[in-house]
Image (cartoon, rainbow, N blue to C red):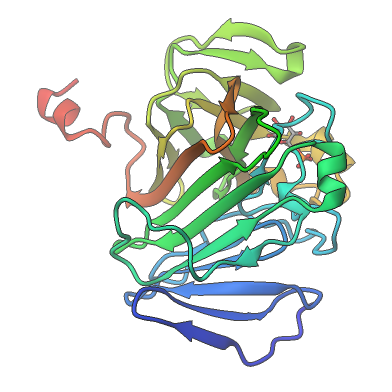
Amino acid sequence: MSTEKTPSSVSSSSSNYEVCKGFNGLDKVLLRDARGSSAEVYLYGGHVTSWKNDQAEELLFLSSKAIFKPPKAIRGGIPICFPQFANLGTLDSHGFARNRFWTIDDNPPPFPTNTLSKAYVDLILKPSEDDIKIWPHSFEFRLRVALGPGGELMLTSRIRNTNIDGKPFSFTFAYHTYFSVSDISEVRVEGLETLDYLDNLQKKERFTEQGDALTFESEVDRIYLSTPTKIAILDHEKKRTFVLRKDGLPDSVVWNPWDKKAKAMTDFGDDEYKHMLCVEAAAIENPITLKPGEEWKGRLELSTVPSSYFSGQLDPQRVIQGS
Ligand code: BG6
């Protein structure tokens, strides 16, 4: 359990955050926005573990059995999958960024557009000598976690090839976001209809999504390809819709382990699958390749809007046209 200490505040003309101890003495960064929304980021994994709205309601799922003990990745929140998604390579599942210690970078290279909010933190991950033994490349991975003026959670990843041997490298990537939902059987996902997906439960065979929005009644583990920049998760019971906006991340993984897999995971409660859904903005089908000196950027913005169950509610144009 955590031994909370007085947080140390960092406040400059631009950013404003606090650092304190989380579970097992691991350092975590607290972000608070003037209107009351907040977020927590563990330096272990560069891992967002909490995002709350101005009513202090938690919006991300974090397992009650999450193990905050390296090298185990934290179950819930937003693990960063890099440089490998799942088992698509020789590294351990989802690569190593989610179980390395990141550091705070108070002087990152400037962003082309300035964040309006002061509630943000910049983290950086560089490979250790041991990392280079398993993935022989030098890189700088900069992650900015920010709260927007309306309580949005914004994650920006900038990954640069710093190889001095002239070699390019390729990677796959995902923001493995665990959303908190009231009841998985009352949830629907809009934005992925009619798209192709690779089904992880059927040897990555390619299928085409049929018909209407996605609903859930059994295990799902799919990589949707060439997905739109905006996806919505409608939580009927909560009357809340999560809106994901993404940039640089063409694919979207949808995952719920359902009952059997839930029971098999030591860091996940048997019934917790009912209260979570992963929708992961990702770059998987076409790995990103960077030459030395090149940088890639992948951005995810999460927000919530009140909603009813009816499809089309999100898009004012469609409501006006009555379709
Ligand atoms: C998802 C994958 O992104 O992550 C699933 O599509 C996987 O196949 C899940 O089971 C959880 O992975 P892990 O390594 O955190 O247990």
